[in-house]
Length: 187
Length: 166
Image 1 (cartoon, rainbow over the protein chains, first blue to last red):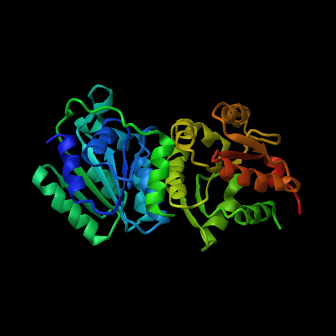
Image 2: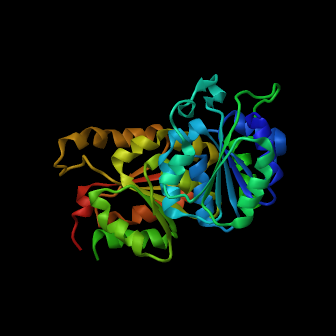
Image 3: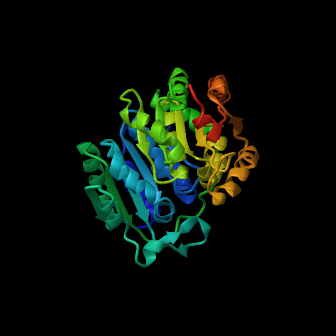
Protein backbone atom coordinates (compact mmCIF):
# COMPACT_ATOMS: atom_id res chain seq x y z
CA UNK A 1 0.00 0.00 0.00
CA UNK A 2 1.28 3.41 -1.01
CA UNK A 3 -0.07 6.80 0.11
CA UNK A 4 -2.35 6.81 -2.96
CA UNK A 5 -4.12 3.60 -1.90
CA UNK A 6 -4.29 4.73 1.74
CA UNK A 7 -5.83 8.07 0.73
CA UNK A 8 -8.38 6.24 -1.43
CA UNK A 9 -9.45 4.07 1.53
CA UNK A 10 -9.70 7.13 3.80
CA UNK A 11 -11.88 8.95 1.28
CA UNK A 12 -14.26 5.97 1.05
CA UNK A 13 -15.24 6.75 4.64
CA UNK A 14 -15.74 10.49 4.07
CA UNK A 15 -19.26 11.92 3.74
CA UNK A 16 -19.75 15.63 4.56
CA UNK A 17 -16.56 16.22 6.58
CA UNK A 18 -14.16 19.08 5.86
CA UNK A 19 -10.84 17.69 4.60
CA UNK A 20 -7.60 19.68 4.82
CA UNK A 21 -4.71 18.23 2.84
CA UNK A 22 -0.94 18.57 3.05
CA UNK A 23 1.10 20.29 0.30
CA UNK A 24 2.57 18.60 -2.77
CA UNK A 25 1.92 15.07 -4.02
CA UNK A 26 -0.61 14.27 -1.25
CA UNK A 27 -2.86 17.13 -2.41
CA UNK A 28 -2.40 16.19 -6.07
CA UNK A 29 -3.36 12.59 -5.32
CA UNK A 30 -6.42 13.63 -3.29
CA UNK A 31 -7.55 15.86 -6.18
CA UNK A 32 -7.43 12.86 -8.54
CA UNK A 33 -9.01 10.42 -6.06
CA UNK A 34 -11.93 12.58 -5.03
CA UNK A 35 -12.09 16.31 -5.61
CA UNK A 36 -14.95 17.99 -3.72
CA UNK A 37 -15.75 21.51 -2.46
CA UNK A 38 -15.16 20.41 1.14
CA UNK A 39 -11.47 19.75 0.33
CA UNK A 40 -8.92 22.44 1.18
CA UNK A 41 -5.67 21.86 -0.72
CA UNK A 42 -2.93 23.64 1.21
CA UNK A 43 -0.50 24.50 -1.59
CA UNK A 44 2.16 26.24 0.51
CA UNK A 45 3.21 26.41 4.18
CA UNK A 46 4.33 22.80 4.70
CA UNK A 47 3.44 21.59 8.19
CA UNK A 48 0.43 23.81 8.74
CA UNK A 49 -2.39 21.57 7.45
CA UNK A 50 -2.87 20.11 10.93
CA UNK A 51 -3.03 23.64 12.41
CA UNK A 52 -5.47 24.90 9.74
CA UNK A 53 -7.70 21.93 10.55
CA UNK A 54 -7.47 22.73 14.26
CA UNK A 55 -8.62 26.32 13.65
CA UNK A 56 -11.53 25.02 11.57
CA UNK A 57 -12.53 22.52 14.27
CA UNK A 58 -12.46 25.27 16.92
CA UNK A 59 -14.67 27.58 14.84
CA UNK A 60 -17.55 25.51 13.51
CA UNK A 61 -19.39 22.20 14.17
CA UNK A 62 -18.62 20.10 11.07
CA UNK A 63 -16.12 17.30 11.55
CA UNK A 64 -12.61 18.08 10.30
CA UNK A 65 -10.25 15.49 8.84
CA UNK A 66 -6.63 16.46 8.16
CA UNK A 67 -4.43 14.45 5.80
CA UNK A 68 -0.84 15.03 6.87
CA UNK A 69 2.52 13.49 6.10
CA UNK A 70 5.23 12.38 8.51
CA UNK A 71 7.72 14.99 7.30
CA UNK A 72 5.13 17.76 7.61
CA UNK A 73 4.17 16.76 11.16
CA UNK A 74 7.84 16.68 12.13
CA UNK A 75 8.11 20.25 10.84
CA UNK A 76 5.29 21.52 13.08
CA UNK A 77 5.22 19.03 15.93
CA UNK A 78 4.30 21.76 18.40
CA UNK A 79 0.77 21.83 17.07
CA UNK A 80 0.24 18.31 18.52
CA UNK A 81 0.71 19.93 21.94
CA UNK A 82 -1.93 22.55 21.06
CA UNK A 83 -4.31 19.84 19.82
CA UNK A 84 -3.80 18.02 23.15
CA UNK A 85 -4.58 21.25 24.99
CA UNK A 86 -7.62 22.45 23.02
CA UNK A 87 -9.09 18.94 22.56
CA UNK A 88 -11.68 19.61 19.84
CA UNK A 89 -14.16 16.69 19.65
CA UNK A 90 -14.67 17.13 15.90
CA UNK A 91 -11.01 16.75 14.89
CA UNK A 92 -9.31 13.74 13.28
CA UNK A 93 -5.65 13.99 12.22
CA UNK A 94 -4.57 11.25 9.80
CA UNK A 95 -0.80 11.02 9.33
CA UNK A 96 0.16 9.00 6.27
CA UNK A 97 3.64 7.88 7.23
CA UNK A 98 5.78 6.69 4.32
CA UNK A 99 9.00 7.53 6.17
CA UNK A 100 10.08 9.78 3.29
CA UNK A 101 9.93 13.37 2.05
CA UNK A 102 8.07 12.06 -0.98
CA UNK A 103 7.48 15.29 -2.91
CA UNK A 104 11.14 16.29 -2.85
CA UNK A 105 12.93 13.13 -3.93
CA UNK A 106 12.13 10.51 -1.27
CA UNK A 107 14.77 11.55 1.26
CA UNK A 108 14.35 9.54 4.51
CA UNK A 109 12.29 11.38 7.12
CA UNK A 110 12.70 11.14 10.88
CA UNK A 111 10.17 8.30 11.17
CA UNK A 112 12.54 6.16 9.06
CA UNK A 113 14.72 5.99 12.18
CA UNK A 114 13.58 6.74 15.73
CA UNK A 115 10.59 9.13 15.62
CA UNK A 116 7.22 7.55 16.50
CA UNK A 117 4.47 10.07 15.84
CA UNK A 118 1.77 7.94 17.52
CA UNK A 119 3.79 8.07 20.74
CA UNK A 120 4.27 11.84 20.39
CA UNK A 121 0.51 12.32 19.96
CA UNK A 122 -0.14 10.25 23.08
CA UNK A 123 2.46 12.20 25.03
CA UNK A 124 0.68 15.41 23.98
CA UNK A 125 -2.52 14.20 25.66
CA UNK A 126 -4.39 12.73 22.69
CA UNK A 127 -6.08 9.63 24.09
CA UNK A 128 -7.48 8.12 20.90
CA UNK A 129 -4.45 7.21 18.81
CA UNK A 130 -4.61 4.42 16.21
CA UNK A 131 -1.71 2.84 14.32
CA UNK A 132 -2.65 1.08 11.06
CA UNK A 133 -0.49 -0.84 8.59
CA UNK A 134 -2.99 -2.84 6.52
CA UNK A 135 -5.12 -1.35 3.76
CA UNK A 136 -8.30 -3.27 4.65
CA UNK A 137 -8.43 -1.74 8.12
CA UNK A 138 -8.38 1.89 6.97
CA UNK A 139 -11.97 2.54 5.84
CA UNK A 140 -13.63 0.90 8.90
CA UNK A 141 -11.21 2.66 11.25
CA UNK A 142 -11.95 6.08 9.76
CA UNK A 143 -15.71 5.37 9.83
CA UNK A 144 -15.44 4.39 13.48
CA UNK A 145 -13.39 7.47 14.34
CA UNK A 146 -15.85 9.80 12.62
CA UNK A 147 -18.84 8.06 14.19
CA UNK A 148 -17.53 8.53 17.70
CA UNK A 149 -17.08 12.33 17.60
CA UNK A 150 -14.89 11.91 20.67
CA UNK A 151 -11.84 13.70 19.49
CA UNK A 152 -9.26 14.77 19.19
CA UNK A 153 -8.13 11.62 17.44
CA UNK A 154 -4.90 10.81 15.64
CA UNK A 155 -4.46 7.95 13.18
CA UNK A 156 -1.03 6.98 11.85
CA UNK A 157 -1.12 4.90 8.65
CA UNK A 158 2.18 3.25 7.72
CA UNK A 159 2.68 3.00 3.94
CA UNK A 160 5.31 2.24 1.33
CA UNK A 161 6.92 5.02 -0.68
CA UNK A 162 6.13 5.97 -4.27
CA UNK A 163 3.18 7.27 -6.22
CA UNK A 164 1.33 6.44 -9.47
CA UNK A 165 2.57 7.99 -12.72
CA UNK A 166 0.75 10.80 -14.46
CA UNK A 167 -0.50 12.83 -11.50
CA UNK A 168 0.04 16.55 -12.12
CA UNK A 169 -0.50 19.87 -10.42
CA UNK A 170 -3.97 20.91 -9.28
CA UNK A 171 -5.66 23.12 -11.91
CA UNK A 172 -7.03 25.63 -9.38
CA UNK A 173 -5.52 28.78 -7.86
CA UNK A 174 -5.48 29.72 -4.20
CA UNK A 175 -8.46 32.05 -4.31
CA UNK A 176 -10.50 29.47 -6.23
CA UNK A 177 -9.72 26.75 -3.67
CA UNK A 178 -10.43 29.11 -0.76
CA UNK A 179 -13.71 30.51 -2.09
CA UNK A 180 -15.12 27.11 -2.98
CA UNK A 181 -14.12 25.74 0.44
CA UNK A 182 -15.61 28.69 2.33
CA UNK A 183 -18.90 28.34 0.44
CA UNK A 184 -18.94 24.63 1.37
CA UNK A 185 -18.51 25.54 5.05
CA UNK A 186 -21.31 28.08 4.70
CA UNK A 187 -19.89 30.39 7.36
CA UNK B 1 -8.56 52.34 31.80
CA UNK B 2 -5.12 50.82 31.24
CA UNK B 3 -3.61 50.89 27.73
CA UNK B 4 -4.44 47.18 27.45
CA UNK B 5 -8.09 47.75 28.38
CA UNK B 6 -8.38 50.54 25.82
CA UNK B 7 -6.78 48.40 23.12
CA UNK B 8 -9.01 45.43 23.90
CA UNK B 9 -12.13 47.60 23.66
CA UNK B 10 -11.06 48.66 20.15
CA UNK B 11 -10.38 45.06 19.09
CA UNK B 12 -13.82 43.92 20.25
CA UNK B 13 -15.43 46.96 18.59
CA UNK B 14 -13.89 45.64 15.35
CA UNK B 15 -15.36 42.20 16.12
CA UNK B 16 -12.05 40.37 16.51
CA UNK B 17 -13.33 37.13 18.03
CA UNK B 18 -10.56 34.52 17.65
CA UNK B 19 -7.14 34.95 19.25
CA UNK B 20 -3.98 32.90 19.62
CA UNK B 21 -0.91 34.03 21.52
CA UNK B 22 2.75 33.45 22.23
CA UNK B 23 3.62 35.32 25.44
CA UNK B 24 5.58 38.53 26.03
CA UNK B 25 5.95 40.39 29.31
CA UNK B 26 4.36 43.46 27.73
CA UNK B 27 1.32 41.37 26.70
CA UNK B 28 0.68 39.70 30.07
CA UNK B 29 -2.41 41.79 30.86
CA UNK B 30 -3.87 41.32 27.37
CA UNK B 31 -3.36 37.54 27.57
CA UNK B 32 -5.20 37.48 30.93
CA UNK B 33 -8.08 39.26 29.23
CA UNK B 34 -8.18 36.65 26.48
CA UNK B 35 -8.19 33.80 29.01
CA UNK B 36 -11.15 35.31 30.87
CA UNK B 37 -13.43 36.50 28.04
CA UNK B 38 -16.20 33.94 27.37
CA UNK B 39 -17.28 35.75 24.18
CA UNK B 40 -14.15 34.92 22.18
CA UNK B 41 -12.21 31.79 21.17
CA UNK B 42 -8.65 31.71 22.47
CA UNK B 43 -5.71 29.34 22.78
CA UNK B 44 -2.01 29.74 23.41
CA UNK B 45 0.15 28.25 20.64
CA UNK B 46 3.67 26.83 20.65
CA UNK B 47 5.01 29.03 17.86
CA UNK B 48 3.78 31.96 15.77
CA UNK B 49 3.81 30.06 12.45
CA UNK B 50 1.55 27.40 13.94
CA UNK B 51 -0.72 30.22 15.12
CA UNK B 52 -1.15 31.49 11.56
CA UNK B 53 -2.29 28.03 10.46
CA UNK B 54 -4.93 27.95 13.20
CA UNK B 55 -6.06 31.50 12.38
CA UNK B 56 -6.34 30.69 8.67
CA UNK B 57 -8.70 27.83 9.54
CA UNK B 58 -10.69 30.13 11.82
CA UNK B 59 -11.00 32.80 9.11
CA UNK B 60 -12.30 30.32 6.55
CA UNK B 61 -14.95 29.30 9.11
CA UNK B 62 -16.11 32.91 9.45
CA UNK B 63 -14.04 34.24 12.37
CA UNK B 64 -12.04 37.50 12.56
CA UNK B 65 -8.66 36.30 13.82
CA UNK B 66 -5.66 37.89 15.56
CA UNK B 67 -2.17 36.71 16.57
CA UNK B 68 -0.82 38.18 19.82
CA UNK B 69 2.98 38.00 19.95
CA UNK B 70 6.30 39.71 20.43
CA UNK B 71 7.99 41.22 17.36
CA UNK B 72 10.66 38.48 17.46
CA UNK B 73 7.86 36.05 16.61
CA UNK B 74 7.23 37.76 13.29
CA UNK B 75 10.47 36.17 12.09
CA UNK B 76 8.88 32.77 12.69
CA UNK B 77 5.94 33.54 10.40
CA UNK B 78 7.51 34.65 7.11
CA UNK B 79 6.77 31.62 4.91
CA UNK B 80 3.24 31.26 6.29
CA UNK B 81 2.58 34.97 5.64
CA UNK B 82 3.55 34.51 1.98
CA UNK B 83 2.44 30.95 1.16
CA UNK B 84 -0.71 30.83 3.30
CA UNK B 85 -2.03 34.34 4.06
CA UNK B 86 -1.05 36.12 0.84
CA UNK B 87 -1.57 33.18 -1.52
CA UNK B 88 -5.04 32.32 -0.21
CA UNK B 89 -5.98 35.97 0.62
CA UNK B 90 -6.49 35.41 4.34
CA UNK B 91 -6.50 38.55 6.52
CA UNK B 92 -4.99 38.20 9.99
CA UNK B 93 -4.35 40.92 12.58
CA UNK B 94 -0.87 40.85 14.15
CA UNK B 95 -0.87 42.45 17.61
CA UNK B 96 2.84 42.83 18.19
CA UNK B 97 4.64 44.12 21.26
CA UNK B 98 7.75 45.88 19.98
CA UNK B 99 10.78 44.83 21.97
CA UNK B 100 13.92 46.68 20.97
CA UNK B 101 12.00 49.95 20.74
CA UNK B 102 12.95 53.05 22.79
CA UNK B 103 13.34 52.03 26.44
CA UNK B 104 14.44 48.44 25.76
CA UNK B 105 16.65 47.19 28.61
CA UNK B 106 17.87 44.01 26.87
CA UNK B 107 20.47 44.69 24.21
CA UNK B 108 19.85 41.36 22.42
CA UNK B 109 16.31 42.47 21.57
CA UNK B 110 17.49 45.39 19.42
CA UNK B 111 18.49 43.40 16.34
CA UNK B 112 15.07 41.90 15.67
CA UNK B 113 13.51 45.10 16.98
CA UNK B 114 15.12 46.98 14.09
CA UNK B 115 14.33 44.26 11.55
CA UNK B 116 10.61 43.86 12.14
CA UNK B 117 9.38 46.86 10.11
CA UNK B 118 11.40 46.07 6.96
CA UNK B 119 10.39 42.41 7.30
CA UNK B 120 6.70 43.30 7.40
CA UNK B 121 7.17 45.58 4.39
CA UNK B 122 9.03 42.85 2.49
CA UNK B 123 6.11 40.42 2.80
CA UNK B 124 3.38 43.04 2.21
CA UNK B 125 2.00 43.18 5.71
CA UNK B 126 0.50 46.64 6.31
CA UNK B 127 2.69 47.86 9.23
CA UNK B 128 1.15 50.39 11.62
CA UNK B 129 2.94 51.74 14.69
CA UNK B 130 0.77 52.74 17.65
CA UNK B 131 2.96 54.82 19.97
CA UNK B 132 0.30 55.77 22.52
CA UNK B 133 -3.37 55.26 23.39
CA UNK B 134 -4.10 58.58 21.64
CA UNK B 135 -3.40 56.74 18.37
CA UNK B 136 -5.83 53.85 18.89
CA UNK B 137 -8.09 55.01 16.05
CA UNK B 138 -5.34 53.65 13.78
CA UNK B 139 -6.05 50.16 15.11
CA UNK B 140 -9.73 50.31 14.18
CA UNK B 141 -8.97 51.80 10.76
CA UNK B 142 -6.25 49.24 10.06
CA UNK B 143 -8.43 46.27 11.03
CA UNK B 144 -11.34 47.49 8.92
CA UNK B 145 -9.01 47.89 5.92
CA UNK B 146 -7.45 44.43 6.46
CA UNK B 147 -10.75 42.59 6.26
CA UNK B 148 -11.98 44.72 3.39
CA UNK B 149 -8.85 44.12 1.28
CA UNK B 150 -8.15 40.60 2.68
CA UNK B 151 -4.56 41.57 3.46
CA UNK B 152 -2.86 41.03 6.82
CA UNK B 153 -2.19 44.04 9.07
CA UNK B 154 0.67 44.28 11.60
CA UNK B 155 0.39 46.62 14.59
CA UNK B 156 3.55 47.44 16.51
CA UNK B 157 3.10 48.57 20.12
CA UNK B 158 6.41 49.97 21.49
CA UNK B 159 7.27 50.45 25.19
CA UNK B 160 5.76 53.97 25.02
CA UNK B 161 2.31 52.47 24.35
CA UNK B 162 2.33 50.05 27.30
CA UNK B 163 3.85 52.57 29.71
CA UNK B 164 1.40 55.33 28.79
CA UNK B 165 -0.97 56.73 31.44
CA UNK B 166 -4.74 57.07 31.51
